[in-house]
Length: 181
Image (cartoon, rainbow, N blue to C red; front, side, top):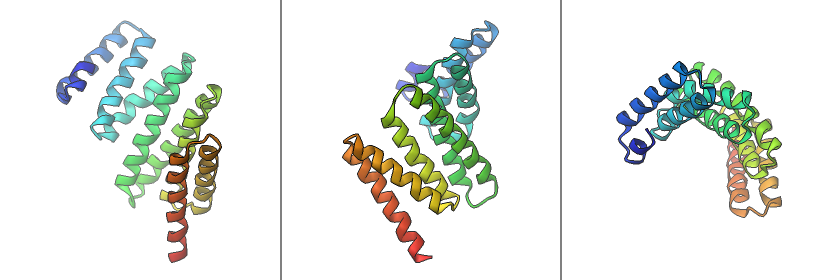
């Protein structure tokens, strides 16, 4: 599946990943299953097929968490949050968007737990920024400002000026939007 993905032969890629997931399930190999589900979800994600990525990423993230695989768990939870946020944005303003935003926030929360355990402050700051974006999407602007401001401060403290500026600009746009209302 990975080779087909590298070649951008997506249907073959998905098919190969689905077969490897099925085999891992038949063998009751939880480690292989978590890995294969992550590959399947990642392949859907790469193609911007976010809704299709969600079930595989959810199961993969949960399995990696259960097995104590902090790095893989943090990656899968974060990707799940990104996928759910995109599905929510695509559905907005339909009420179904709120369920996806809720899933995104829950997934980001899980990701940050693993990131903190790994002392991965860079990815934690980026995830805090993403939480701020989702909160802005759902109209919780005060909370969004707090998260975006915290992300900016974390990036600045880490010397990551480009990321700090990105958070600063997002926060600036949010404040300008609020002034217009």
